[in-house]
Image (tube, one colour):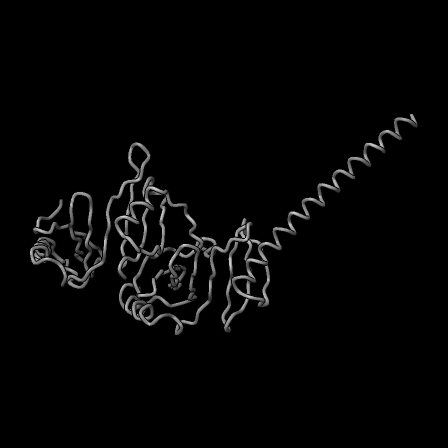
Amino acid sequence: MIMKLKMYFILLAMGLFSFGLQSCDDDDDDAAAADQIETAFIGKFGKVDHRWDNHGAYKVASFTENKTEKEAWFDANGVWLMTETDLPYDQLPQPVQNAFDKLIKSKYQGWTRDDVDMLERKDRETVYVIEIKKGMEEFDLYFDKNGNLLKEVADKENDSEDYLENTAIPGEIVKVLGEKYNGYTLLEVDVDAKKPGIMEFDILFKNKPLEVVFKKDDKGHYQWESTSQDILFSELPKEVKDAAKQEETKHVGFELDEDDAEKVETPKGIYYVVELENDATKEEIEVKIKADGTVIQ
């Protein structure tokens, strides 16, 4: 009995010793990873006072720079992914302020402005996000530096992690974008669960914002589907303007928006999109028109 107890305690001690060694190894690995991330932070931002927090798989450093609050996001390997900066509204680029002021007086009349963020992200162009509120509703409006509205999305509690937008881009899409829009800069990538097989890209090309859409074919390859661009109604071909005004006469109570339009390029050709609006019911009708004035049914 005594021999069995001795053997039991020997085995127990060996197990605890082995566990201790493993724990030490894990601690060493964690310390090395922390040092790697800390070094990456200092390399990018210098030796400023900061505090680390964990957000899921990400390490986030909170700090103040030039009297503004910032959060720097890193992955577990110390790769910088994003810096989110809280901005006073008057520090936004003037084109962004102008675009927002126009929106808040028209489409979002009655809404109030809340938080303003500047997002600098790995492999992405800088964008600006303005949060607006009306009652229980909240929306985030994304702008590029030129004041182009990129997207409008319902505000969520975990905005910062959503801001990361680190969607992997298939090589075949990268190739097509590079060939069609050499020298472009990437603003946003949008993958909507409600649109399976569709990837949408907001890019800047020759200082113009474009939305480029790719669709997965039956063989699993992404094919270029369309490229759309916001234009002025005054820039439309005469045939398109005439057709748009003719469509207006067919819809009682609707008025043609003679300010804005959209140009869409597809593998089959180019068409234009205009809107008919009903102020009383707030309804909108999109009309697609080919360059020769033919309305697409």
